[in-house]
Length: 361
Image (cartoon, rainbow, N blue to C red; front, side):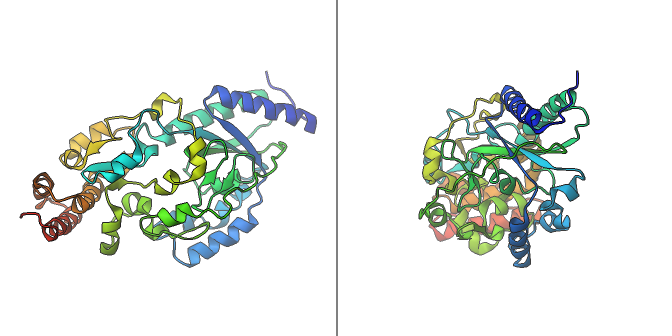
């Protein structure tokens, strides 16, 4: 049965009900914000003008809809932001993997099922619950799937503040979580913004392997390892390849050193559990996967979208950075004549790196 909520006091009650529904659906927290993003808009325009988005053309092609929710979805009055933890319990310690150059490091958010699918499904269910209860409700859900400034919207709520690495931070939950949004036409009561607690800390800036965090709260995507291994489709700049180390999909360094992540909680979501042993696996083993192996083992994973060619490109760079070992060179030589120009180029570079370090060829 639908309920009419004509008065603000009733929207307060609805807000409480949304929090209860969200918890039932596996979300750890809910925040409500208005749609005003004028300050963020000026920052975005400057970032784009400086070309720091690299090949992320989608950041510019939607114009100002990214910073004006009511233009993206007419009638939007509020944004419901939701948080879901993703750090899998029992995953191999990240530092241990990063320190072993023959192993592959994959960003911890990508070890399980594709979060887009998990989050979108839960957000849609929450929207349906609201629609069933509220007459005249209109809403649209987003999970990294449209021009939405999710961190800027979330930082306007009680969910956290923007860290110097540009990610959202919470004192009790760190940053190991996904964000999703529902744009709604309801005048729900809005949250008070979370106070910032980074202080003088600069660990995330100092640790970045490629110095992609060019200043507090400013990221040059063109240097970011997550961009280079996931979003960049062509050749990885030669000068950045040695800095990538063994990171073959994403990079978590700025999160790993953040003091607030000492309070982070692991996920209770089974879909985010480690699949295929990807938390601690050898580079040579992954490099041996043929396209059919890649497609079968990574179906339903966020990694699947980069494709086998890009997968091999990334691993080739990591093998070039690996300690000199006969198995490393042998693995590289299996792909030296690969049909893809992109793969051959990066394998040739990796073989040269190994030779310079004393490997045989």
